[in-house]
Length: 200
Image 1 (tube, rainbow, N blue to C red):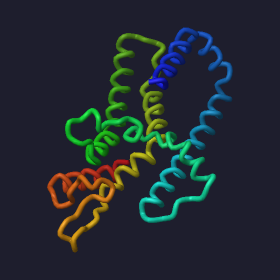
Image 2 (image 1 turned 90 degrees about the vertical axis):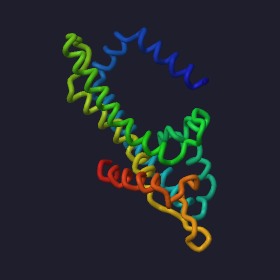
Image 3 (image 1 turned 60 degrees about the vertical axis):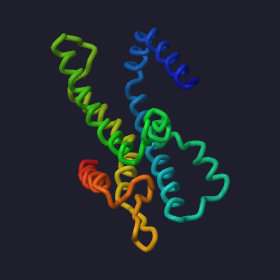
Image 4 (image 1 turned 180 degrees about the vertical axis):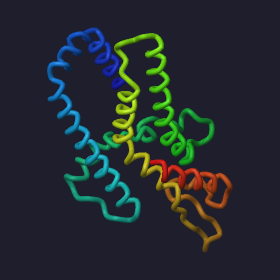
């Protein structure tokens, strides 16, 4: 709630000073592009480190020593994993399982691209000059995908590995034991995840 209030306050401030912000961005365009590039490199490297650390621990590896683990834990939000940040379980009567998370993280990016393209085309029809071109919309979408690709890839690849119990009598998804690997729901998720492996 506090983060939302801070975000809305900053957004309102930027909106009220939009002319000054535009002038500043135009004046310092090259420097801002360089900062954006450096921030993207930092963010993606941190995402890879955080995901690698989590995966290492999940497959039985030892925890990394202090103070590195504290440092990585404090930057966990940089993975941009919406599923971990938002309590979706509270919003559903039934459990929000791995298949729901997989569908969310893989379908939202193409839907965002479609919405961006539709908005850009609508703006062109209306003659709004402040809205960029289709190429600009696609470029922004690719930047977003570049930032969330490690999270999407991890979620997709977590859809395959099952663990057997009682000598192979039962089999459940390793990442989410609520999913029985002997059901058609798992088989559909397996096929969908295989397709998303090719897409992403």
